[in-house]
Image 1: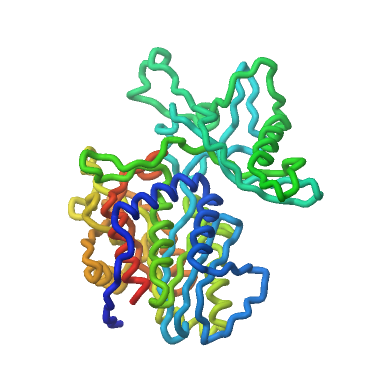
Image 2 (image 1 turned 45 degrees about the vertical axis):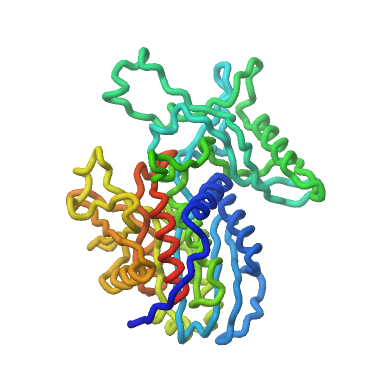
Length: 446
């Protein structure tokens, strides 16, 4: 397929883009909050909200407009249609809203001793050592019975340091720097406060704390919460995202994998109102395999596209002329551990986005889609790199292969080079983030 690129005006500068990214990460401690912020930005940009349960009164074949849909409050699809889907296809970007973290268990209270602690479950492939001695807060979604006897849901965020996981002093573990291992059950429960009288381990007192917090954040025009039913809560690091480095080269932040890609795709979609048919999907649960109603292995994207096309025939025709760009962070070569990379495929931070390739289909890139991405980078004036894992090491994966197999759509796996992936604080390049945005503008426009 040959394409003629049209020039694209880049609407923001690097500094403005990075500042917006840092603000987005700060406001998005959980997938629920990330989707809420994206909804806010989309509505400000004139996108119309659709409900999956409603009949979409959209004219098939002549559909134009800007819309978005959410599922589970933690996954979102936003799209802009400017022409017939069966003829022009659609350019899609996929990312994910979740990150490795510590999730609070259903009956979490550990009241032994003089301290209140909460039992946690490790979500995803978290790098656990950096979670110790950090200022932790708590956020997520809470479900409750309100004063009108209805089930309601509310996002909460303490927005202050309320917990810590203290390290054991080296004096009590002399081999800690050589042989430290972490027991996920016993070593990770955060400490929330000192208590003299003890707290019931049935969770009622913790529910009381949640209830108070929900009502603190409840708007005055909504009925108060009266009883907690359930919750999905995650601890997160209170340290603010920052630009670091002697020459301001790097972004240091939690959840760069993969909120950086969510934000970049969102801003590129919003920026151009009249380009190609374009879609952004940000799924939850990628870090745990994507097998859920809100995950990429669920039917969320396929269901939306099927409804837009109207028939299996139209869907097949659209997929034949469409493209998916799976955008997820890549491993930058670490200067202290360069031997962990293939010597010819070690991406360098701030030297351009990365095409991820794996012969065993852990990534969905092939020669056709890789070539297309290189062409978009060239049109945007952006350098491009490639990543292949060492042949003697296991390779991670993304939503790319899942989406490619579910939809039968051409797919390329790309991302920005990153250090400390899955740590509580990751590191990426300021210029890489902005350059990825520039490439996505060309991709959506042409």
